[in-house]
Structure formats: structure tokens, C-alpha cells
Length: 140
Image (cartoon, rainbow, N blue to C red):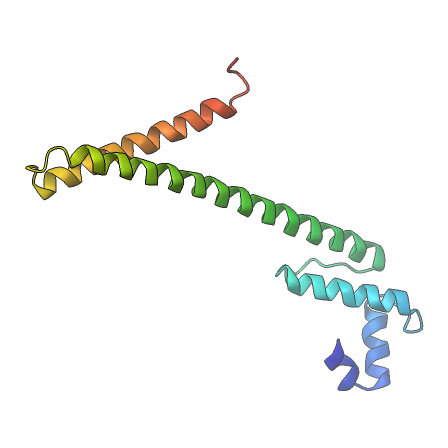
């Protein structure tokens, strides 16, 4: 917008706003169009084949942009929390496996790796199953 103001003539700005259905004298509508374009770029929706053609559509799109960005942020935070809880659980598993495997130091490295891989796989499968059962609405 700043570049549009600095590097265009008054007629070009008026034509641009008229193409967007905005009266150049209406400052609120002009800022709303600006806000729409800023949010379109900010949430990386882009200026595709479908876009807002009037102020009401722009307000609706801005609401959708903000809602979508908020929901996406919440989902990313939840996924991060789930991954973090699995990492804490696997740290505990590693501590117990180290203590368990140190009792038999005569095992060769490939055998130790197979035991660790099997235990980690079994542990992660059990954690996923417990998570599903815990969140299931059918379990009383």
C-alpha cells in the first residue's frame, strides 16, 4: 500500500480503489481494503482466482483468515505437546533400558540394539493405544 501511494498518480489510485468497489473519499473502506490485502499476504492465502470484491466480503475473509490462523496455531501447539509427552516417556524408557541392559554386560552390540529397537517399538505402540483408549468416549 505504501508503494501504491508513493509511486502512482492520483488517477491510478482512484482507478485501483474503484476497481475494488471503494470510494476514494471513504477512509474506513480504504483502510479495510488495505487490511484485507495485508491479512491475505500474512496468512499466505494469496490473490488467486477467487477474492473479495466488496467490503462485506473482505470483512468476512479477514474473519476467516484470523480464525484459520488461530485454529492452525492451536493445532500446532497440541501436536507439539503430544510429541513432547512422547519424548518424556521415551527418556524414561531409555533410563530403564540402560539400567536393565547394564545387568548383562556380556551382550554384543547388535543384540543390544535389537532389544532397544523392540522395546522402543513396543513402548510407542502401547503409548499410542493408551492414548486412544484414554480419549475414547466409549470406554467407561
